Image 1 (tube, rainbow, N blue to C red):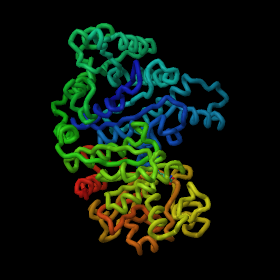
Image 2 (image 1 turned 60 degrees about the vertical axis):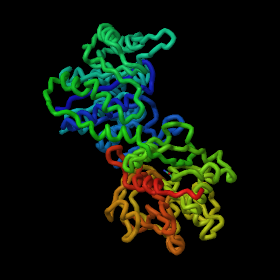
Image 3 (image 1 turned 30 degrees about the horizontal axis):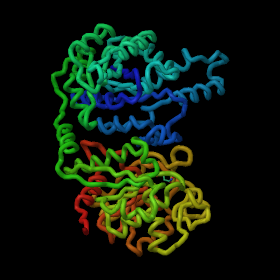
Image 4 (image 1 turned 180 degrees about the horizontal axis):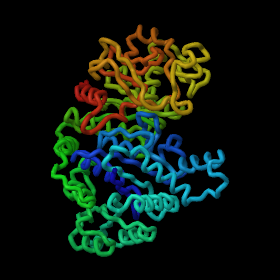
Length: 541
Ligand code: GLN
């Protein structure tokens, strides 16, 4: 039977529960265990799909098409274990399951209540399809003390009671502030947060203390004493310079060893940290560096393009170079500023996006990259806009556009429904998961003699999608005559998945999101190739 590790957070949010869970998962996996991480989010949205990236950061997409919390991205990147739709749930989803059951008469007229109905649904989610795993790490979103968290904390309390303490462990992450003026480390917030947790019936077994400075023995003793936790289970996590140091720092603090001790598991095999040292050294110390400009709409929020930022850094790791990200707001950039803002970029990337705002800034940036032979990478919306730019400026289709933001344009990009109506696609040509979005993994065939095939070193790939609009395949010939070839095509030959410009050193657009599959220890081939091209870019002056 799997052992369950429940991770909660206290005092404040954003302490790095996701990163701590992901690091622990890596350490356990590296010691030979089969690990799964799940995220339980107490907010009422059914999934993060419709949430504003400004508020919530990026939406991470799994192979099976779930739109999930970005923490699942951390999990995948650190463990190289793919998540599924079964690994993220929200209070909204739980309630919608329950309300549907209630309407269908599944509760036989009984009163439907938080306990047991909501808590049972949460428990069902936690234990669903866990056969064959050694450890299930469940991270509870939010902070202890939030009203929304209560049913989740009650559910994990019950769950632990159901399976027994020997099979379940509570890990609590708190803030231990350092007060500069008095040069003191304060344990009181941690004591209060643990008190709150205990009032809900949960006694933490391990406390992870997030702090600016290292915890002296006395403070550890104090936390151990007041919070009723073994001193060896008071683990510090001091701010790291790069997230790639996190597995190393948790290893030094013996987190994995303490977890195994708790479960009375003897295992002499140590986690392999060599790749993390290598990664960390390149990111922090490499003498080479380059600038990549990311032109997007949500640049003000740090996490809005999380997986892209990470994948670019991974590309740097593959090429032993530090990647500086230059985020440019596509809504604010004026045509007259494009040259100034972009000319010292080694590469330009346009990420995914939705809606009209900021599109012209992106199109101008693409034109600049194309004409000045700057390595260019268009992702999803970025690829669609690259086609529009080319159609307008090279094919001279002046009103070329996407029906997403201009209903009267010549639609180079449009809704699948439009292609059905116009006979470009036949019903059933494409199986679309989810509502109207193409979500999750789809296969794509790579053209012979294309650069993309050399990059991937294979003829068939599978990548993750999240979009509603598609390229109008009827324009293929026109584009290809001018050198912009459709070098990646869907199995049914109807959907353009990859474009590349033959007359340019490195100009690619992809309809999918390769960033979701990049890992620090296994950089994605497209990002590695992009950074390689960026590294080789010559500047005229
Ligand atoms: N808005 C575009 C579409 O829906 C692109 C989406 C994206 O970039 N993820 O097709």
